Image (cartoon, rainbow, N blue to C red; front, side, top):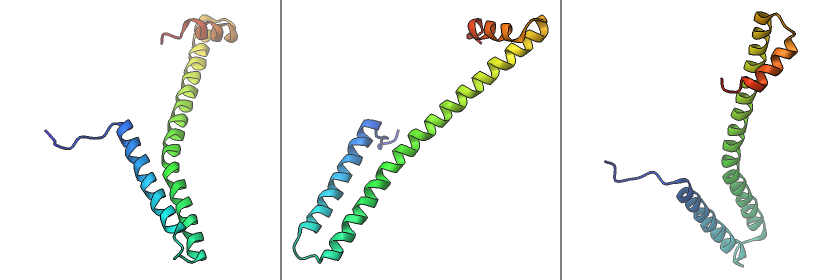
Length: 110
């Protein structure tokens, strides 16, 4: 049995939020100090902005991946329904549109 456990999503989110807060406080503290020259402060703001952007890009990319998978799954199901309807229509020798409607209405249990 491992002594280290994987953090839950909520714990990981709290940890990430805490790390961002520490980084924000550190950068803000550095930039508000009067001992730093203006160009360094500007670059620090720019670097901090890039850090925040990178921290947000990862969850966004993850969620976009999930959305793409769901769209692909839906498209595949539609193709299966249409193919099934065409095959049933050929076997029954009826209008393909009639078979397609019947499969969409009654074939959802497949």
